[in-house]
Image (cartoon, rainbow over all chains, first blue to last red):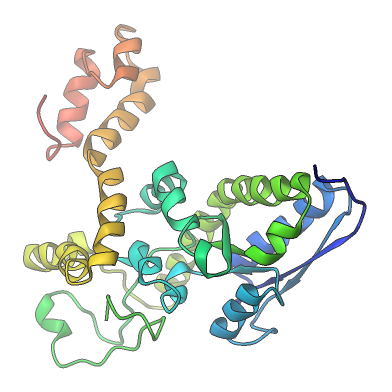
Length: 161
Length: 144
């Protein structure tokens, strides 16, 4: 039987961005955890890759040096290629549809369980934004994509390259 | 998504583990309006700055067809990924019907006959006024 303890648990929450939905989530999550646990969870947010690049952050979480990472799943494709399934082209047509998909129990179970044997425990899944192609000149037809170079993120995503 | 260290999580007392999971799930739902607002704001900023938004629907039919098939075509080449893809995509099947039902439920208040509320909720559009409006607004939805 586990004995209740009053020991404080520090939770460093790391993320790569600043001033977006991920950052807002991290701030809200930290505040909520502190409040609900009556201060037993001491959550601190480290935005803008203060704790290293996304890959180093993920390694930190796997080894326990960092307690929590908020990240787009496709950035974890090096851990398991299935992490990039939700970045598939044309999967959803609107924010509302994407939000419904992220809340679907079957999808949550799949995504949150992916890193279980790699030192990760999935806790939450939500939609930040839809993918966009940004170009200097309008891309109205498939032929407009021809002979153009595109930078994309994440760099190590193989399936959608 | 939110990933925690399994090593750290497993060492937490049970009640704190529940808090971590429950709060993450609660915040995952609570963040949706903020994310949607930010998305809309970003699009508006793009247009205000002289940019143009080109949706797939406005593009050619060939472009739409090709882009919508890219995900499955590529996933098929990677067995593990395709297994995950097959879990995700069925959750989207029938989305046209779901959108139609959502629209129908939104129009229920406007329904002058007042009939068929329960049927609307079940997904059957029996109210003549709503049925006509639904057909007019959603020409591509499947006929029942």
